[in-house]
Amino acid sequence: MTRPSPRAHFNSSRLVRFLTENALLDTARSEGDVGQRLGDWLNFRQAIALHGVLNPESPVEQAPHMRRAAPMSGEALSRHVGKVRAQLEQSILQGAPPGSGLTRIEMPPAELDEPIDPKTAFEPYRRFYAAHQRQMESTLQTLRAQVRAQLAKGSSALQQLATLDAAFENILAEREAALLAKVAKLHEKRFAQAVKAHTKRQAQAIQQVGADADPADNTALLSPTAPWLMPLRQAMRMALLAEMDTRLQPTLGLLEAFNQENPQQP
Image (tube, rainbow, N blue to C red; front, side, top):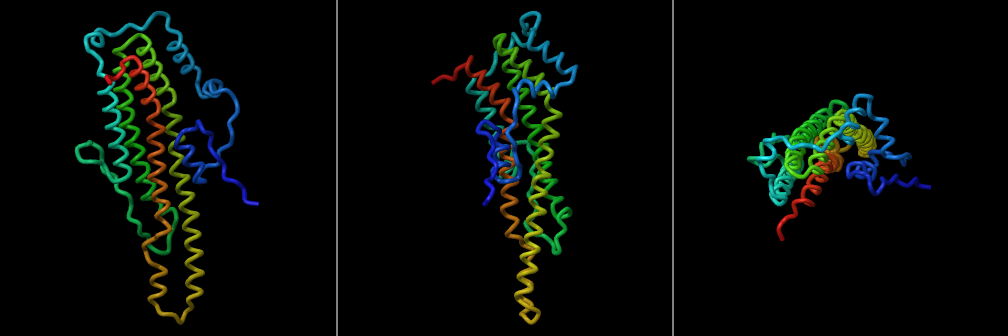
């Protein structure tokens, strides 16, 4: 009997769903209250800081310079978030668009020298993936701070939400970075498996052709172009898009809260 592929929870992040559905990650159903599990991640100092944010002794006061500046309209802020998102998406799929300020990160050539050493051959892909992660982290941290700054110009409820988000970002940033850094290792594992399967197929094909065959036949079998590599390259791009979506969730939540108090004009 074939073992069914594990399925991520319907409310899990897009990245977890992608990794699970593509058999890059085996997820087990997590038990326990979300708040309890979050508490397990916090150290003593972080818990005290978070408690202070959640239980302020007095209402949040706007800084004088914040009171003088009016917030952006919901429409303008939504456009800005959408523009940054589209630029990152294009950077992952096709390369950074001109004028975006993003560094162009090229996918390695789809050619490999035979015989293939999995670690050496994967290294350019590891650098490609890590570079996109750094670009996303830097760009989306800035975007998140910009949206928080707009909330800080609004009502006391929005100000408190902005303060809470900044606290959570500070608390969870290190853990988030450590977890996301593991995704490239999942791709490397899949890459090594694909190389092993390719090498086995190649050896079987050469054996079937035989020593007396036309040398051109063997040359074709050892061609540096690796069609089996194409699905792996595409999976890396799709995983990066899913990671971008996951990293964007806090910012989109802030934007939604902002738009509820600053509805866009019909």
